Image 1 (spheres, rainbow, N blue to C red):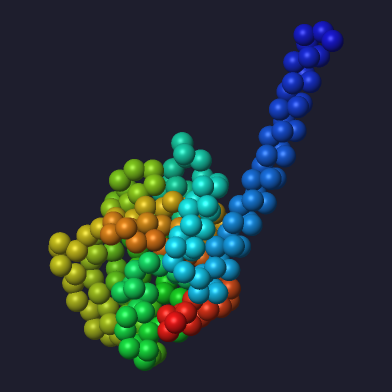
Image 2: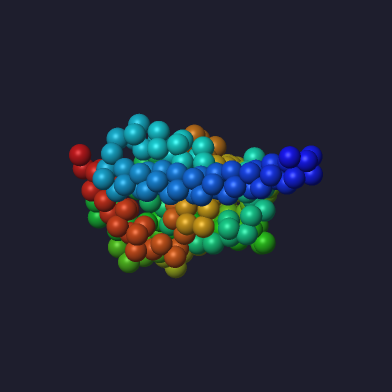
Length: 207
């Protein structure tokens, strides 16, 4: 085989391997996502869920040299289906004051704004925040104002934090906060799925 044809064969082989790798990676990613969401919905132990979170993060389709913060996939309304924060989930509240629906997080990268909201006994409560990029995967967060039904009041200037995006694709986002909390969210297009997962996980709170 001449050097020219040998080079062509190597290029063809590399393309085949690359394509097969992409297919395998996508299949593995889907399997890990499905397992993570199944564990959450079934009310598995936090240890098992967090292990599945790490397994999913390991196959983040956004490569290390790419910016998640600049990704067009980030801006959207996201529905939280799991968090290690009992206060944010509301699991420590009386049952009457626990939301029946996944808490929402609207992220608008262009305006550097975010809004967290939830519906409790028919009243929408929310907190608005400003975002400042820190690096390719993290934004610093400054909370601006709270709304409880029709009432609005400013947040203290000292109320700040950060949010790191550790996994992002077309349907799923995993984030980690400054207090070490983990958040698993589904895009709003998956609202029915998110509602079922949230309700399944919420049933485990009484175990």
